[in-house]
Amino acid sequence: MIVVLKQNANEERTKQLITWLKGMGLDIHISKGQYQTVLGLVGDTAKVDMELVESLDIVDSVKRVTERFKCCNRKFHPDDTVVSVGDVKIGGGHFCMIAGPCSVESEEQIVAVARAVKASGANMLRGGAFKPRTSPYDFQGLKGEGIELLKIARQETGLPIVTEIMSVSDLPLFEDVDVLQVGARNMQNFDLLRELGQTGKPILLKRGLANTLKELLMSAEYIMASGNEQVILCERGIRTFDDYTRNTLDLSAVPMLHELSHLPVIVDPSHATGLARLVPPMALAATACGADGLIIEVHNDPIHALCDGAQSLTPEEYDRLAKKVNAVRGAVQ
Ligand code: PEP
Ligand code: MN
Image (tube, rainbow, N blue to C red; front, side, top):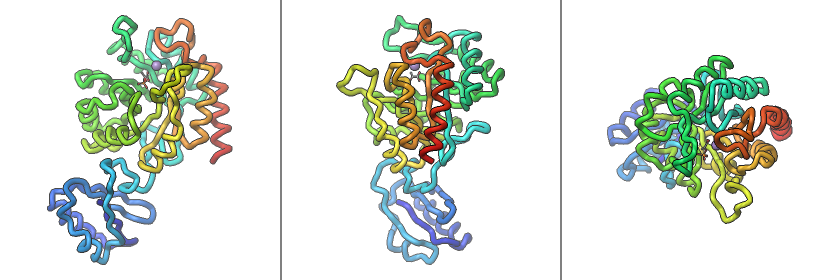
């Protein structure tokens, strides 16, 4: 349920209303917008007398929120959420470029790629240390050592680091990581989501291979209901019947998610297509349809990459793409 307060509602009376609602065992999420304050009520709202609340002189309107996702619902929080990672902001008009290799392979590799993407204007560095591979015989990532190498690259470039967490038990290793990524395969690892809700760190939540937008939002809800509002949604392609591309990039997810939720939405054209030559056109399309950022795989030697070389751009290709992304942003703004 949401309670929209009148403009300039009396503060004391608002506090009394909130205390009364909390007394009914409800969680109250307060969203102070430029023009309106919205109270989002979470819990068993059946016992709230809507007509009584609506009759209060500080209340403009009361509405039931029929969707099961509440905290991430745009109705609860009409303004865009801006996620902050140090000085980097995502959402609400702030566009963010995240770039780097699929996996961290060595200090030389990650530092070289970090320097290159930074020079091309990237805002954050990605790199997998724990890799979710389809085959147990493939390179599984450098794990803890990979995180240490990412920190070196951060020190060298100042770029905040984004890396995937696969298991709750690894959480202590991620203490000094700036953004924790939940990969497509773990989108519905509810124990992991709940734990991440208690970290207070920005979470990059990727859509599962075969998950609906509703399910993605319910997963964001797990993180937010556990106390963490810093969630970035990521469309990375879904499984369909076509097999020319690795996945099918669902770009309609971007405006749809923006309609349903106040959270920032970014796009990963690398995992969506699996083909480096398709990454630039889809990155530009994602930018044009309103994405709040892009996450792109870049490798200094894609042919010899230990993971996802076929979809990785070279630093030169990334540089050309970054310039075009800026041009598209200028055109659609
Ligand atoms: C990744 O970003 O390296 C990755 C494994 O992505 P996804 O979970 O989207 O497949
Ligand atoms: Mn990858």
